[in-house]
Image (cartoon, rainbow, N blue to C red):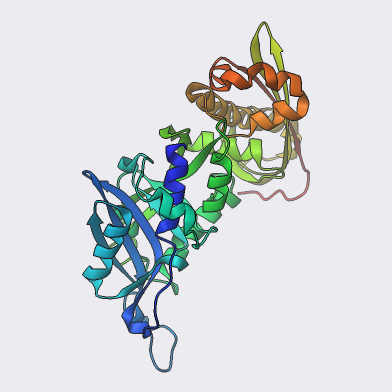
Amino acid sequence: MKRLIIVILAAAVILSGCSAHAELNELAIAEAIGIDRAGDGYTVTLQYFNTDTTGGTTAIDSSQPNAVTVSGSGMTIESALGAASYSCGKTVMPGSAGLIVFGKDAAFDLMDSLSFAASHYSGNPRAYIAVSETTAADILNVKFSEGNASVEKLEGLMKNAEALGMSRTVMLHEAAEMLCEPTRSVVLPMLEAVDCGSELTEEGNTVTITGGALCTGDRFAGTLPPGAMSGLCLLTDEGATCEMTVKLRGEDVCLAVYGTDAKIAPSIENGAMRFDVRLSADCKIVSTQLSDPFGEREAVERIAAAELGARVSLFLEAIKRYGADAAGLSYKIRSYSPEMWKAVAGNYREALENAEFTVSCDLHLERFGIMHG
């Protein structure tokens, strides 16, 4: 079984199990969990709800931090989790965690407790999963000071990025499903903790999405830049939306793109796979300094279509470089021609590495909705 599937299953270990009755102040109710490699073992970092913030007359005491972070290390994920529980002196309840972050050095080869995870899964399959540019602990140590739960800000960050067509959220069950097939890969949001002097966090730092982590087979393959992540959304999310700014005669034109549709036609030419990708979308001008923006309709459409095509091409170049099907192209081949799939199924990764892609885009600029900046 592939190692990345093992990671997903191993992550489920820390979301499983049940505990005996305990008072609220004796519990560490996990909001988010981070997994890092620590030599030959693991470090598990928990960000849990601070029960000291609860008051008698109000649900939340805003004068208290709303989240506490604790870490523990061990040779296995379970022993690291136990060490974290011992360190905080509370009964850990990881089943409510809404986010799991893997440190980059973990490299998705978490071999620990596969059989236990496979037979005792009872966690949260809808937990979001992501990768840290450095360590998972760096992400979880950023604690937002507003809101009822710090992890809600991280979840909101990823959801907003998806709504803007910048990235994609991936849940635990989705990743496991995608990785069950040996020809499939998955792209997880890549997070980075940065110092920005923000007043919204306890120590003036925050978290940003820097791109994506492409995971294929049993390994972490590499990172995708933000443009490629946008291309992934445009290619795979029917009706996807995004915002972008293009320049026309030196003036910025901010556009809202929506209603995207991607038609992919596979073929085999001269023994090599070929994919003809045709995008279509509508857009509106959000703001511009152009005196007659709709009068420049054809020019705006042409420039914007080229930008959309470039984003999709950037993503396709990445999956070709790694031979990693993170866009469900194998489904397109099989539905288009079962005989074509039989011809490449035995060596699909190599076929993808040698494939050729052509991308075209048809963009329609709506007249209404224009605002002058």
